[in-house]
Every structure is written in C-alpha cells, then in structure tokens.
Length: 311
Image 1: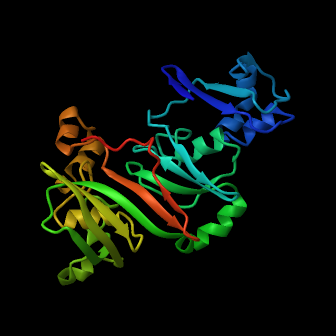
Image 2 (image 1 turned 90 degrees about the vertical axis):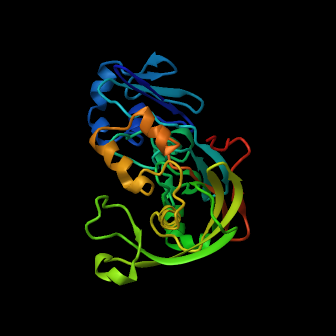
C-alpha cells in the first residue's frame, strides 16, 4: 500500500482461493468504495498480479490484488505493525507510534485494524482494546467475530497485567510510587478530552470521577528526563498521562498534558512547526505498552526488533 500525489494504492495479498475478485474486494473495501467498484474495474484501476483484472475473475492463494483510488488521500503514518504472538482465537501485535488503531477523519485504510485485515488471513479481525494514536506497544486482537464476542466482555480476565514505559520531563524524588486518585473530565476545560485528578475542594467541576491506581518505578535517569515503568491496576482514559502530569512529570511529547495543553490547541488552529516539536521533545508522546500478562500465565513482551524511542 502506498500514497501517490495523484491518488492512493492499496495492496491485498490473497490467502484463500476466491471465485470472484469483485466479492473479494467488497469484503475489504469501505462502503463508499464498494459503491464505485464497477467504475474502478471499467477504468482499469484494479490489477491481479500487475495485470488489469475483471470483476468475475477467479483468484488464488499466493496472488496479489492491487487497487488504485485516484481521488483518495490519507495521512502518512508508520504502517510497520508486527505480529508478536498468536493462538487459534487471538493475536498480540505491536502498534507503532502515530498509527491510529481504527478509522479517523484522515485515515481510512492506514489504520492498525485495516492493515491486519488486509495483510493476514483474518479479514474479520477485531481490536480487543485500544491505544491512543500516539502511544505505541502491545495490543490484543481477536481473529474473528466469534473470538471478539467471547473475549471482549472478559477482557479484565484475559489481561491480568499491563506494563508501560514512559519517558518524562524531570527527575522524580522517589524511586517507586503507588498513586491512587480519582480522574474525571472537567467542566470548562479548553480540551474536552482531557482528564484531571479530581480536586476534592471543587467536586462540582468533575462530573464523572473514577478511581484510578498506578504503580510507578524509576528505571533510568538521564539529563533532564527519566524513564519510568508504569503498572496499571485500573484502566481509565489517559490514566498514566494525567497522573504523571499531575505529579509534575509530564510525558515527553504529550501535547495535551504538557505545557498546559498549548501545543494541542495550536495544532488544531494552525499546525505545529519544527520549533514546536523541538520544544515538545518528540513528535509523539513517549509512552509504550511493553508487556501484557494473559490468563494462564502467558507473558507477551515487545520483540527485540522493536527499537526503543531515541530522545
């Protein structure tokens, strides 16, 4: 799959024989592109092994389908996801920084779930949980709808431990800290998605307080920054980011929780410059899900091929 200044290319490896190329594509394209599939065939925008293809053409495992969308454009992102572990029902994958997990206003096909559905035999794969677009790391994916229905309601039983690594500004005075608080959105906040540690003196400003608990441990200290291990005991929205910022050690590159959210709002209004990214310290917030422990004692960690963030 690649972007082109005049359009967008999609590539589909064929894993199972199919009697109709049209049927194969209908299952893999968005509703909007399904609607113009006949036009794409007539305009010779669809190729099978680099030859113009027809709708009722048979396709076989090992072949490759390519499709050109002349009017479609997507934001360039890191599409280098990796399969880490799998069984009959699920897989664990690595998601890079800045790759959205699912459809956004800018990306329809350059997303983690779309890539998995195209690049593996699991065309009906489903995300079992989510990571923010800027967060990298280990994620669990159901291989089909049946596995999704079975495991998503039991996610707390499936995943018994979650460990993240975060690079933060500053150097904490503690080596280890168990931090508990309530988190909530805040009435009047300039950033509606932001959550805050609840101030007990102003409870009326925090309409949805939820208990959150994280264990923090210093792993390495460098000039002006610290690598911290974060173990989640609850799974609240933005939990690690909001708690570390409240403690005075915002995650490097965090546009919402560092610099009072200034760069988040600036990105919306006018975009960010190189100088802005230099001030932030990274083009993305430096938070990575590094380890999951599953039911039955299976431990899934980032593979050695995943290079750590260089700051």
